[in-house]
Image (cartoon, each protein chain N blue to C red):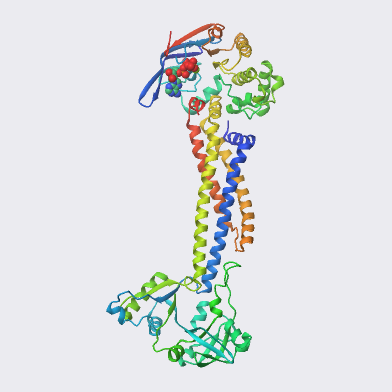
Length: 408
Length: 221
Ligand SMILES: Nc1ncnc2c1ncn2[C@@H]1O[C@H](COP(=O)(O)OP(=O)(O)OP(=O)(O)O)[C@@H](O)[C@H]1O
Ligand SMILES: [Mg+2]
């Protein structure tokens, strides 16, 4: 019997005991479908995370924050001025690995315009803040270098505050707003910012609609006794990389602080922290589910294929007694396995794509079955099938006819 | 001489214990003979038969079929001898449950290769007719009686025109009437010139053979 004939025998067998074949198929289809769905949802989630990270500065953006003081601080710790505007200037002037340095000064101040008043956040910063955070104006302009240089009394209002203070956001332009008792000219109003991880989730960027931006120099001069900062955002030069940027920051700031009293973390974890945490947890759960379903899918498929071979080892014994060679038996089993895995993989992909659509629609998350996902899913089912099929095939083929006939 | 076995031994190894199943068997078979191998249970009949049928290899000794030394053959070569020289009939019929009677019978020709499907079909049908099974060719084995199944198995063993037909307790799973029917078939095949070796522990069955080889405790007595 030729190899082709052995393969055809295998295909014929797969067709004839289609009840068993169907069972293997079902395992494969469900396994593959779950892999496809999980990967697609995971991929959608990853895209979402990427989008969010881009909104808040993109990969490579780091946030420096003061570390909590020790319970019993040492002298060096007490002597340090912590993060200051001076640190920001030092980093800007000396660091060679940074592409942007943005000092962040924040205060709760009273907003007032006409009869409307409330307390809210005011951020003192520099023009680069808009560049890094992808901030767009609805009207007017953002802060300029000249504003920082001259410490002008200008403010750029977030959409919601502009709306609350002046009845409609565009009306704020050119008006005067009092921040912490000092008069500021509104030179710009920002677009409304929105980013939701799911339709039911809070707007992760709402904090940006509820604040005003003023030049860092003005903030320090008008509302502070010193030039202490709440945070300092930097972006690593892509050529240098985040790791080198981090170590350069540490060494430059250690020189001025005399102690490492600040933490460096990637952007996107702190602002909108809840969403960030939710996202991390969500991704983690998906990852676990994905790995578990791939594993169980594989075990189920392997088991079904193995069982179907063990059941038929005696039959192989008879075939060998009639003149079948080990190679022929091997080819027959492999052919059966290939039929099952290819049909199972493709149907599983189809089912998984359907499931992805439904789950994505119900949960309102962007999930797509990319060619990559399809490749992984089909590849997994093939790999599992071949591994699970080759082992029993070798086992069956290595038996002598008598051993096979006695089997079980 | 069609078949010549000399000083065949077979030792099974069970863990650290050696179980000698054959302890030096000499046997020669002439073309056209009808031989019955008998002996008590566990005496080594099946073991001998499996070696003679090339389903197993001896631990030592020499074995020739048709002048070819098959005792030393392995793998593919042994598969060829099984396919061309030997027709084996099992106690439990061992038909392929999902193939039709005709497909079952044609199977050895398929494994032999080099024969077109219509030819394989023709030969299978011819044999089935000879064994009175023409009206069953499209059936599956589970639609047949035990005696019919065993005759299908005999047809399958004969389709490749082997040098020798071997049967290990061919009537063991049959009632007396079906058993007698199968034995009649063997008688008839013998008359037509086929060489037959049959294993049985039933003296009445053995009595139908020309020659009885009695085995006890792994040796011919
Ligand atoms: N695969 C094996 N492993 C270990 N021992 C075996 C094996 N096959 C047979 N034996 C032993 O070899 C001896 C001969 O067994 P064999 O099956 O040839 O006997 P038998 O004459 O066919 O008996 P029965 O009439 O019951 O079929 C027995 O002692 C048996 O236990
Ligand atoms: Mg026996």
